[in-house]
Amino acid sequence: MNQTYEFRHAVTRKPAASITEGLRAIDTGAPDLVRMQAAHNAYVATLRETGADAVELPPLPAYPDSVFVEDTALCLPQGAVLMRSGAASRAGEVAEMAPTLRRHYSEVRKIKGPGTIEGGDILVTPKEILVGLSDRTNQAGVDELAQLVQDWGYRVRSITVPRGVLHFKTDCSLLDGKTILSTPRLAASGCFDGYKVIHTADGEEAAANAIRFNQFVIMAAGFPDTAKRLRNAGYEVREIDNTECAKLDGGMSCLSLRF
Image 1: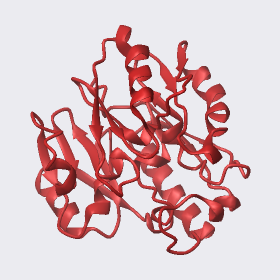
Image 2: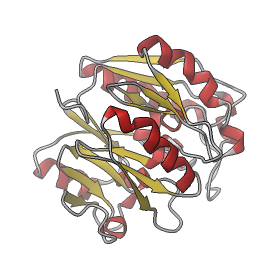
Image 3: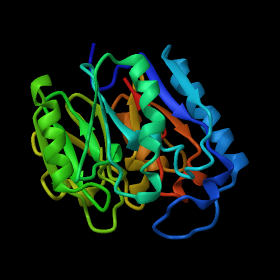
Image 4: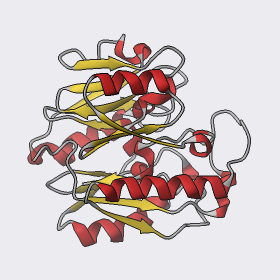
């Protein structure tokens, strides 16, 4: 089993009506809850189509961004690590996710701080864990994560996220054990030396946040040239409407924890 993209479980959370108050770098309008829910349903259905068990947790109105569950934890075969958000309004989401992870894992560890780190900045490959330094994740958070997963056999390497990019995985995703989908601006830093890189097409940088989930590469709809590149490389691509999540800087990886 390839531990980087073959999964039996996923955890998602339904968007709450308060999603209209979610964080965003640039205000491009309030998300449409009905359209977001329809896209969320399609996303969960696609996860389940692979044969995986996809749990849908109830909405959390007190936390507008709580649909983006990936930021709350890092899920590895050996155990889970609860994160420590770099956004004050999201701090309580981790405690809300913890009981669900404890039902699945016998060992759940926790970032205690003072550093901060979010799951959207973490990319796990077969040989290392790459963590982006961003507005939400700092070096102290990376250092604590490295200590927590050292006895599980993982090496952690920090990456500088391009200016203006919210999370590391805003600009990249893992396609298989050796291949990464990346924006040219991120790949130009040399952070993926030693990996095969497929670049997003010009003007389609937002396509970089995808997930490899069992047989599918699940990506945001509306980026035909990047989708064509992935299909030409042999991947089975599924496209999901991400219009509303994109208004909150969210993408395909943000919407689930996968293990």
